[in-house]
Length: 401
Ligand SMILES: CC(C)(COP(=O)(O)OP(=O)(O)OC[C@H]1O[C@@H](n2cnc3c(N)ncnc32)[C@H](O)[C@@H]1OP(=O)(O)O)[C@@H](O)C(=O)NCCC(=O)NCCS
Image 1 (cartoon, protein in one colour):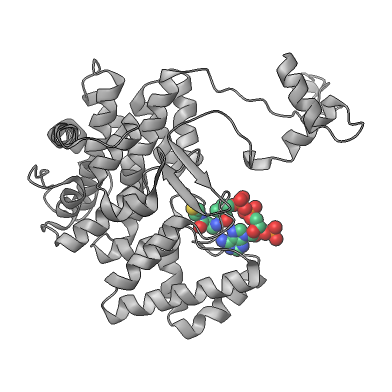
Image 2 (cartoon, helix red, strand yellow):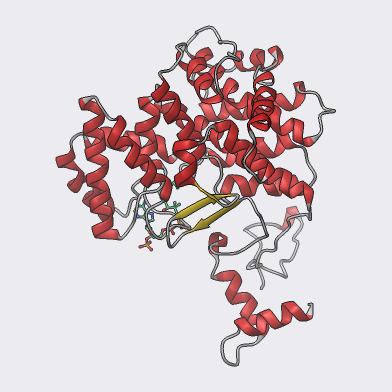
């Protein structure tokens, strides 16, 4: 143990506490690695107490309404906002890489129509690794994946519904083209703006489960496609990216704003979690939820949307009063995604499209200063189990500690 580490542990020790106990305490108190700092990064900063989220120092409060997918992606990868000519070149490069190889589309078209959209996306990203040019340097591969994520998701949607897969349009920005490839129609400027904001708000979130997965894979010096494929798998879970779809199911179940109180009451009594609330890092309202809620107040027009908004707001009120739990990004994102024409079952794949620039920024940062990520576990199993040969084994072998 270095002198520095020794000094840090001494500083963390309680009065008279031996150092091995300090280590044990730190490990066992951090189930789920809560509050454990596993490395350094200059990409994203979260202030969980104040409810702030910064990409490379820029507040999402400024980026979401003003920036675009392309500009924010450039920022995440390069550490500074692009000049006009940098943005033009970067956007053109991304646009030129949007088309997905025919071999990948052929694999996707062979999947059963009831295939989960995130499973299909995982297959799609993994297949890109086989069909993309293996000689691309990592930066080019990152660009290729980010550019193609939206094309993959739109293709998955259209193949599922026996519709023609639409080729990307290079006269449209990333967000508008995504909506075009899903719906078949060029979106209204307001919807394009909202889609850009949604992609920006999902672009990065420090060491969330999927980004951490991507970094672990990159740290073995495996390739970029493998790291993003792993991240897609991690994002699929309902405790991570899958929550927004569950929020929509919840609003349908609640039905009217008047039912929200009894619904929350019954769920909490059964110790069940309400999707769209709580966060490992934020101890206050997730700033992304606050921005989306504010936007929702402007874009909700139909009676149906207004009712959903009221249900969510009522649920929010109950959760704050009874549990001191606040909305996370997933509470209001579904309302916005449905508004721009994204069906609920595509929410998590579209989340992946938005998060891909963040995953890729972290993968590139990991490669740039790599050390294998290989933590330890506190072993709590037996240590002297006796091997009994098969013919003498009558019951489970007795474990001796
Ligand atoms: C996001 C989440 C996984 C964070 O989990 P975590 O930091 O591990 O927190 P825990 O699950 O240990 O929860 C801590 C306490 O708050 C409660 N809690 C947390 N989120 C809750 C929720 N959404 N509904 C009801 N109770 C919740 C837990 O039941 C637990 O209570 P207890 O101590 O009385 O048992 C968790 O809040 C959650 O499951 N939320 C719902 C899913 C969701 O919206 N995910 C999207 C995240 S962006």
